[in-house]
Image (cartoon, rainbow, N blue to C red; front, side, top):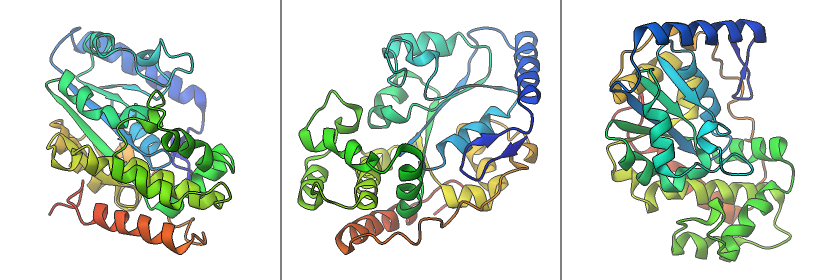
Length: 285
C-alpha cells in the first residue's frame, strides 16, 4: 500500500485494499459487539491540507471504521457532502462495532463544537498546512477559479452555504478589504485558506481540549511520531509503524514559488505563524 505524493492514497493494487477491508470487517464482526463503547474522531480543517492522508492512515488500523467526505453520514445532501442531522449521524456511528470511528466532514469544520458535544468520547484533529502549498494544490485540483468561487458565498453573506457559516465579522471585513474581481487566482485561494483556518480561533477551538492541532509538514516528515501522538490524544493504542510505512514528503514546499500580493501573503503568514506557535501533535508546548 503506497501513499501518493498529492496527499491521497494510491494503493498498488485496488484488489489488495478491497481484501484488506473485507478481512477488517470480518475481524471486527467477531471481535467487538455492536453499540459498545467507542472513541470517535473527526478530521477537519481546510481542503488540501493533508486531511485525506491522515484519514487514510487511520483507515489502515484494523480497529477503525472510517467515513470520508462523501459517505453514508451524508445521505440526505444531494451532493453528499453536508452531514445528515446529528441524531442520524450519532445513530449510525454508535451502531458500528469498531472501537474507533473516524470521520472527515471537512465542510462541517465550522460546526465542530456541535459534533463534539454529540459524542462524549469524541476528539477532533484540525489539520493545517502552509497556505502557499494549499493554494497551489487547490488551483490544480479544483480549477483556476476555485478561490473566487469559494469566497463568493462568504462575501455575499450566504449562510446557507457551508463556506459562509460562522464566519466572524472581523474575518469578513478583512476579506472585503482585500478582495476584488480581478484578484489573482492564487491570492483568492490563499484568502479562502485564511477564512477556513481562522475559524480555529474565532470558534474557540484553540481553547477546546477535545481539539488537537496537526501540521501537515510534521505528519509527512515524522509520521510515526505524529501518529503515535495522535493515538495518545484519542486514547487508543498506536497500531504500529506499518500504517505509516509508505508516507513520504515530496509534496512539501511546492507552493513556495507562488507570487502572492504583499497584503495577502502577509495576512496568511501571520495566521500560519500563529498556528505554528501552538502545541500540536508530535510537538507539545
